Image 1 (spheres, rainbow, N blue to C red):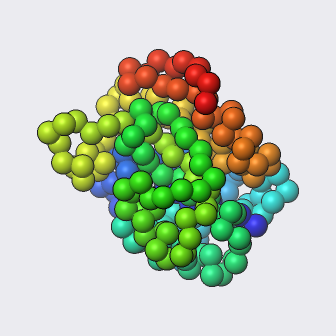
Image 2: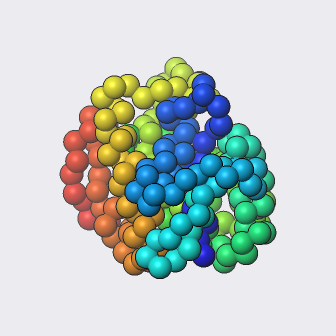
Length: 200
């Protein structure tokens, strides 16, 4: 059993914003796996399915970003997976738009949703898929930036990244986090969207 959580903020006004990258990946996974994520449980929208013979629960917390841990803790208490079977997908301002980075564990790195999850689970030993949304402009407030929408050019790049992140999650379950890291962490994306390969 795996719990796959995409972070974001609920509500029409936040749809397709940078901070909702996690929701976007869950939507792509749901489409890929033919799972309906519409069951209201654990302060979230949830859906159940299978990946590579493993039961999975897709979770989109409806608590707002800063309280994401409440939803994740509720789902974890119910399904009781090990921490390494709770995969969190979220946005990262330290990566160029569309760049992915998979980690088996780690700190919050300043991300409030991850801070909340670590606080509620009492561990940071859970895998995560970071989806790059780009660095904020120098004179722009961080909150305003992460709640802003992508430009048309960025969105085309992000669409591909959301699909790749969904593939990465599947590979983490079928082949392990190391295999997914080797495949997806080696792909670097410049700020202008150009892809180049670089050894890890």
